[in-house]
Image 1 (cartoon, rainbow, N blue to C red):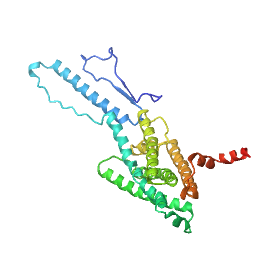
Image 2 (image 1 turned 90 degrees about the horizontal axis):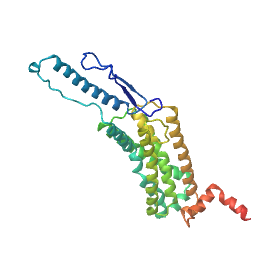
Image 3 (image 1 turned 90 degrees about the vertical axis):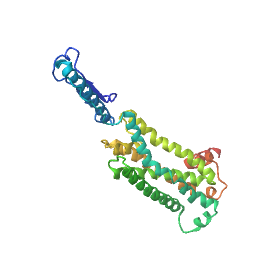
Image 4 (image 1 turned 135 degrees about the horizontal axis):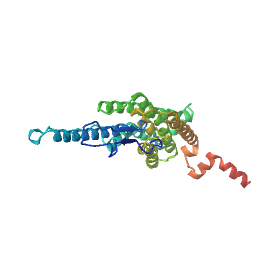
Length: 306
């Protein structure tokens, strides 16, 4: 149990110490790792099994002490408490997915506000205005983030009304909204690079699949591996928070540091792309050339060519 491989241990008396013929209490000891999110389910199942065994042993003692003709069989109704372990895990993951779902419903707003400027030929007018291109990208992104935040608040309110158990809703909401920052930044990169809606739609589809995998896979690993590892996924952090788990410094620092780094890099790249006239007006350079120019490798190659 100290190594984290076992969640709970039940200790029963040995065959020499346990005798049904003797009417005396049977000691049963249960040790549980309270850091494991599955502790409540295991405790409920052990208590249910203990109550059932206790009823059977008591009934046997009564049968042995009382003549059969004078015994009236009592009505026994069994009730199980708590959810089965697989169902509880599914509920946690589904709750987290529903909380983060609004973040993936507004990618079309970014596409329309950036790619639409290119297709409608209004980008020239927008760029000619006394507004920097970086402010254009940040302004469009901020508008979408505010829309996501309002939708996430409404979504969480409806989930609580529907009966979902969400502890610390304020902190969970902050985690969800903060996760929107890098998602909008990555969407802005795709929208700034794309020539039309079709190209942007394909790019966003692949990007969102990768983002969802980055969020969900560590969350599933956290639950299946009994929460022993710190995860960079904010969905894992949200599950720990709305489940009432104890958080360590690493649980908070690692995911928020990842969000900050990805957000800074994504917005820097999207602004860098939108400042290039060949990206906005064409002809657009290839991905390899852009990669060389962004990393500075093109300067190194030109130096050796000379």
